[in-house]
Length: 209
Image (tube, rainbow, N blue to C red; front, side, top):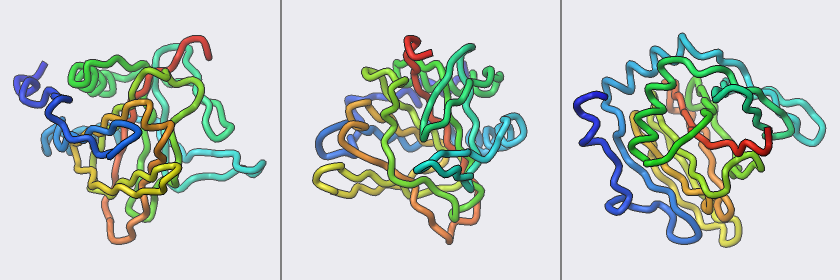
């Protein structure tokens, strides 16, 4: 374990919840230092099996601009947007990042969905991470590397909008009840020229394998 880990250990009691009601989304600006975040980007760009995502929307196959990859424990599968994916085996870099996130959050995760955005012209539409395979009592830990990007929440009933900036090396910890009441998105921002990598650590329930 690196010698600086203790100072980055997350304290949920001292954190600010970005959501005013109906859920919890704790933001921590630097779980990794600037140098660590930059090094992770270089390694992940060359050691992840990136591919453009294929989604089925109203019976039509859509190929996304962003590239994705899904890694996890052996035998796991995950379905979203009517597409089922099988987990790729963990590599040493992902296991290293996962170990730090798990200790910091006092949570365990068995999979990681990665997204690669080439620049600000690539984003993610409004959605909730509420697929049946996800542990309903768990959380999603989202690590941001690379370009700084705007991230938004929208309440499903009141339509209240919450915006924040996700900095490189930061972590956003979303408790599962947030997914029931809020959607979130990564809006496109043409002015952003740099790439961004997002790692979302999740726990898949074994009964849905």
